[in-house]
Length: 200
Image (tube, rainbow, N blue to C red; front, side):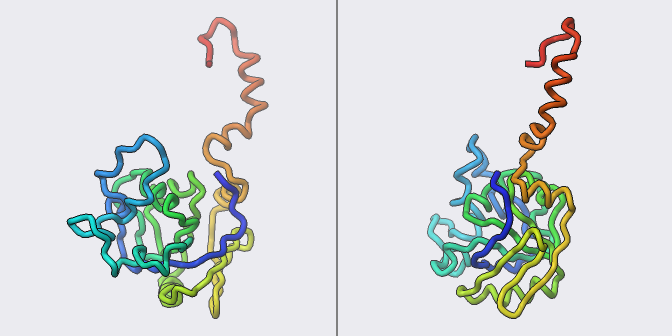
């Protein structure tokens, strides 16, 4: 998991409320055993017709947004099932952050676990960013240390839990967090009675 400091890139607007995880990555595409390779199926049923042809009007099918790194969407983003594949597919598509008025709790935590930054702003602030994002020449800067989102004519401060901020800024996934207690783990293993079953 890569540390996050400053993200600068294009925004892609997806102004829809209650975007659930089945819309993000439909269930028929959950068969891969790797965490990678889900990007092409992101929002598949919105992006492709019944013959599997791209729908030109869908925002992520437009060449002008091919390099977008920040997704701007509506309230209750990531609701529905708890599938981890949803943030995996967003990350695999090239996004580094999602901005919305609110997120489903499990989805939010799944984003944190892979280093995908979820940012909560007010409805009004997200509406303004959506308008800005409708111009494909938009560029936004997200500063995790300062907790700011900045673009032309716009700046907002976002709240984030201090421990979550620490994890993301240091690039610590769950395994890396455990390994920060390496000395304590080693001490425990060395002093553990020999008659107990081996831990390895």
